[in-house]
Image: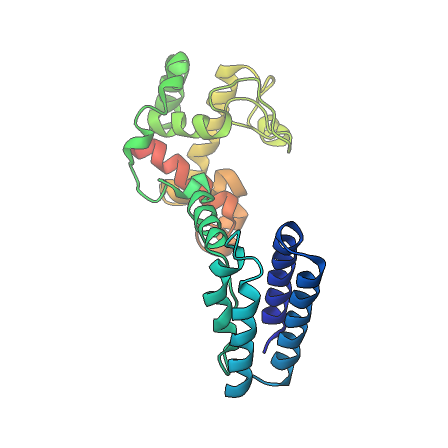
Length: 254
């Protein structure tokens, strides 16, 4: 018998003790404790057919102690499965199994809920916030030959159209330019929407040129750096970058 199964029996004992405290005399509680001690001793000694019969009998006797609240009766059948020779099964209450199932089904990262479908309708209206910068985006797209929608998609993911946002890493403005990148691109005020979008589009154009106009690789480079894309020969194996590329491509193709 494995340690986990013994631990399970001890947990059942604790539950049984709670029921016995509320509904039984101190003598019954002592008897219950004695029964579980015998059970564990038998388990440690090996689960032979005789032992299994004895333990099954103990379980049957112990169940009457708390039959008034039904606690032990609900556990009895599943707990007996621990007695089968060579079994490593561990009893898990149905309520716990249900809770685990609900947790597994409800804790998926939002980036994987619909991002696996390029062009998902869930993203259809996601770029509405770009309308306030339409004239700047149009100018940047014409100047650097970058699709307007791709620029808008990057802005959506980078700042959600907030021109004053600053990331924990220090990236600034609508297209989240790092100070050194902004300086390299000739930006004097990264919080000015026109300067930020024009510079961001210019940098995006450079990444597109570097990676044969592949928007996926250009976006990966925009997020993680061109050197990492070159190093890994594609989108780097970083969850942040992979999720970034997925989301922007969904915005772009919706």
